[in-house]
Image (spheres, rainbow, N blue to C red):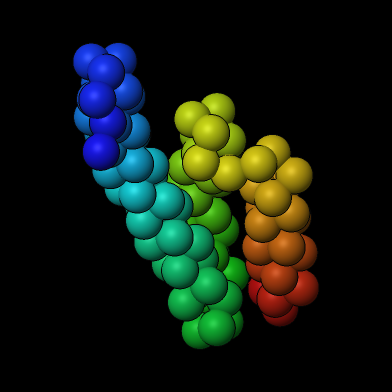
Length: 88
């Protein structure tokens, strides 16, 4: 257990940050799942709409430190490639 006031404060701030990051990560996963469901259904228009909503969320995850920029870039690239491979 932490003894110093700064260590106690650090525990509190880490808990707040962990909760915020958990919510951000969950939100990103939900958006990505919507894109994947549209891709599986073969609906290119719906997939593009879902992707337009998901991409800013993934990018925001990078700026907030939830994901590494290369991880986000890879996720975006793979989703975009799968959408483009769908028949119109």
